[in-house]
Length: 156
Ligand SMILES: [Fe+2]
Image 1 (cartoon, helix red, strand yellow):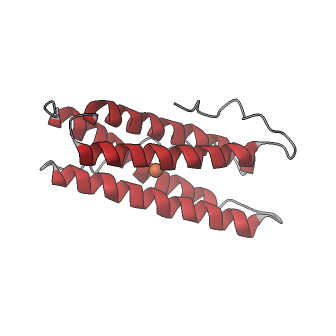
Image 2 (cartoon, helix red, strand yellow):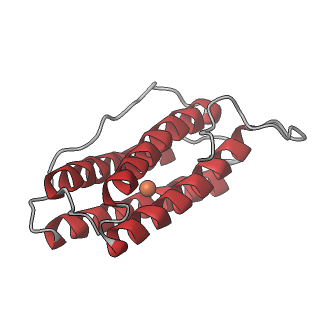
């Protein structure tokens, strides 16, 4: 196995941590802005996403300290279009999730054949985030439409 580029790995893990923490804030914020008949399941779903993002942030943070580095206290960009429309909220979330997915792919490229545990972690996260992005994409489709929406990340 080749040597792990610790500094680059920690750099990407810190970006992941920041991006997942932004997810916690984003999903929580949006959960306050859902009105209308569909409110209850959508609020519940957004809060579940906030909890999942927190779990992902904690996992990234634990990896950073496992590698003997200091976790970032920054937070990723918070895209707020100040809209109450569920479609816009979901499109914005999908965009942010795709950024996180790219970071996990970046991590995988750095750790592949260098650390079994980190490679396993990166693959599990790509799997989880792709399923998640696929779910958001389905929420954005019109009933009866089979094709993925234009914002959906290509499966790699
Ligand atoms: Fe995540």
